[in-house]
Amino acid sequence: MIRYELLRMLRNRKWKYLIPAALLAYIYISGVSSFTVTEGSIYQDQQIQAAACLVSFLFLSIVYQIAWEEEPSLSWQVLLAFPLTCRKSYLCKLCTLLLFQLPAAAIGIGVYAVIQKTIASPFLTFLLCIHVIVMEDLAYFCMDFRRDMGHPFEPPYPPTVARYTDNYILMLSSSKIFSYAGQRMALACISDKLFDRQFPALAERYKDAGVFGPTLIASILYMITSGCTASTQYAYAEMLRLSTEGKINFVEDTREYARRAERMKKIFTDNGFHIVYDYDATQVVGDGFFFTIGYGNMTGGELLRELLYYGVSSISLSTTGSEQEGVRACTSRMRDELYPVMEERMRAFHEDH
Image 1 (spheres, helix red, strand yellow):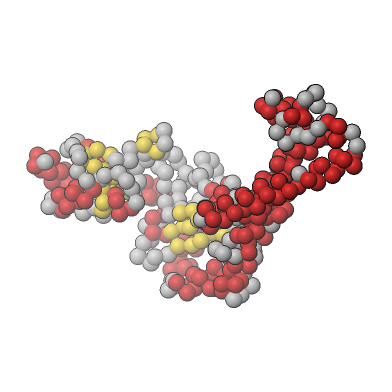
Image 2 (tube, rainbow, N blue to C red):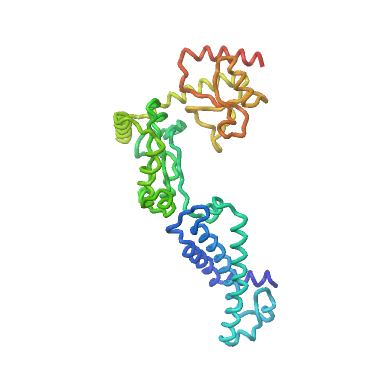
């Protein structure tokens, strides 16, 4: 009977409008448009209250649906319903519905208490789909050499989170794109919407207006970075300008790293090594600045140590946060005269192991 009653309500067109109404009520209560999370702040508490109110709202929606609709006989016996005789009078109906506010409030308070005591603040922020800023590392911008991305404003375009949200910071480095590494030059691209957004938590923490862009520049980056010489900044800006105008093709220039990686990987795989991260989702991983190798059942640390005896330096994958065993190899220092040397040493490594 209960299952039948719930199915009958869900099939009702009026019920379908209650879900967006409940979500709109949640958004209004939570104040998403101006929300900023600070652990222990009133804003976080406001979000918990909103979640509790959402549950209460849905509970009352079911009750009202049962109360207001004409139902088959004996349907009042199902959960949350009440006798049909009470519904003949609007006054009785109103009084009965008001009584149901009490269990709805109790449910909301219970949900509030459970969330507040069991869910950590950062997870709560994510769970409730609150304001999240995506910081995207584009140090290897357009360096997927499986496709030709060297032509500005023409497809194919590099994937980026900026296509899906205005809450982004894109980080571009000169070290990889232009092989301009020694100057340690980079830039952060912030959307206009995020740059001009005001956050009460930032204002409280940094004692300023709390506008994201100026706070990030003046109170954060200025304090934790040493800056860069003016000549380097002008050089980087000019390289970016020429790239967007199509006068220089940095993608073709950096394709050399892919050619090096292809030759190096063949030397390793011909001598008993395997590629650890060999697929990018469903595609074979592209060649580029780095690649990963493993050997038999050796751990990353063991392989790193053994390779040192043969004059090959690397880093263990465990230091990068990977749970796979192996090491990371870099192509940046390879020269044509080193390939025969590398092949000879990897052949010796394979014979010895």
